[in-house]
Length: 249
Image 1 (cartoon, helix red, strand yellow):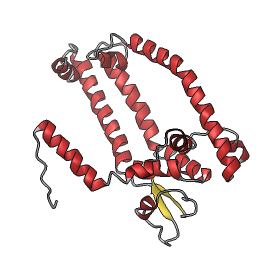
Image 2: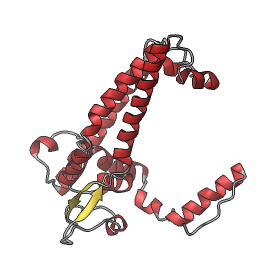
Image 3: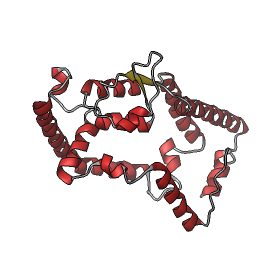
Image 4: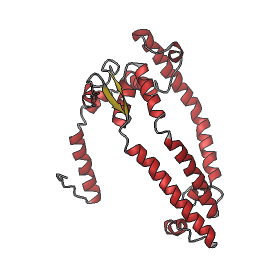
């Protein structure tokens, strides 16, 4: 299948020479669009600035590693996972969590048009190869029988999980109400009256700590980064017969 797909992706199965040329041009454009979109995301070091008071609750080792603003009064929270997850799970201020999540979701507007174009090109190139959709092309070498069977499985999964998700939302909202009663909040009344996207990680952490006695900060103390890295590389060496040698590169 993989060998067949490799030839297929070069347009080898398209008999019409003009159509094959059109296909290759579309594939080249699709690849360029996706590379540009990924490059925009991967090379970005964007973020927003908060005062230490606005970041109250975030572990000090995370704060100490953040860059300072030019005047030295604020810390730069980037959208990288290390910063994002730490702030969303630990920042006491809902306004801070909301501001960070909103900024993250609104970045890179130029990628919207790129990804829309990529979707168009994926489907058009799939049709040139004789498939109904891009999804049908991707199913060719998968264990799933068809696109329809995958959609049916996802729909069944959604139906079965929805009641569990709703119950979890109710539990987290109860925790939120209790927390607000005990500690107050700086969010608007409208936001305080519901469970928001920027609330999930924060109250899920509280749930884990209260119900399961799981404290991620205490656990993290046993996984110092260099020690953990050495252990991980040791596992790779044993499993795959690899050898990792440190360099000064």
